[in-house]
Length: 320
Image (cartoon, rainbow, N blue to C red):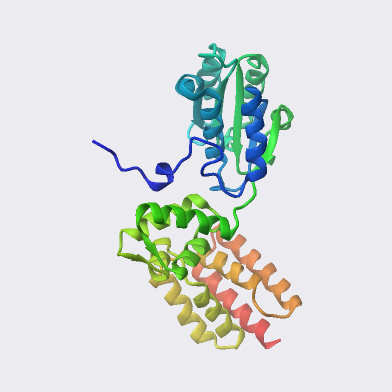
């Protein structure tokens, strides 16, 4: 019986050229390693959902081909982040000999920035001692969380956020293959809700496709639990015009209709304020204040009080 995979897995490529979008320069460098049949340790750094894991797996497939299963091990460091995983799983696998004609195996550590400092120091020693038979690929959202001795042993690849065009192009390809009809506003909503994360965009597309024959803007925002940008702008407009009570009612609608958390509202306010038509000095003051209220909420302050205080500040800014 065939098992229906999530679309993020179903469209995972086994070739570097096939499905990796927006990272052309990185793909060219990785294909050079395939041609040489050799590579150094690699560190992939960049935001989530831009192709780091896909590149690692596709690179290994092109290097190993039929012996992929024997020569490639993938571990998620956020699941097992202590020193034991390095001493037991990684060290024992790295000590074994590669299978087939290739001279090395690959250990792929996803979310390596979640490893503790002790685990990273143990990993450094393992990388030194097994360099003849094993190569490491480390994937991290923040390369600064990887200790310097490991960084110096790796070739660094910085993955850039995907553009709106790249995300839309890929979504159209998947929609065509799956025979899903998505209107123009639906694609714009998918791009906005995903925030540059292709994995999110594909998951939103798949989930939205189950709710009707056509994927629309309304469907996407309901699935993603995001407010429409125009509604967030309306909230800002009302507050800036001094209509505090109406702004509060709009805030209620965003919180209860979409089920947004206080931090979700703050993040969407920030995204809209960046492009809001307002005096530059006021915009700087407002962004500074948004950062302050976001910090307060992450420290445990009451979300409702902080959001209404921010609305009050918007009213004062508007009166200036």
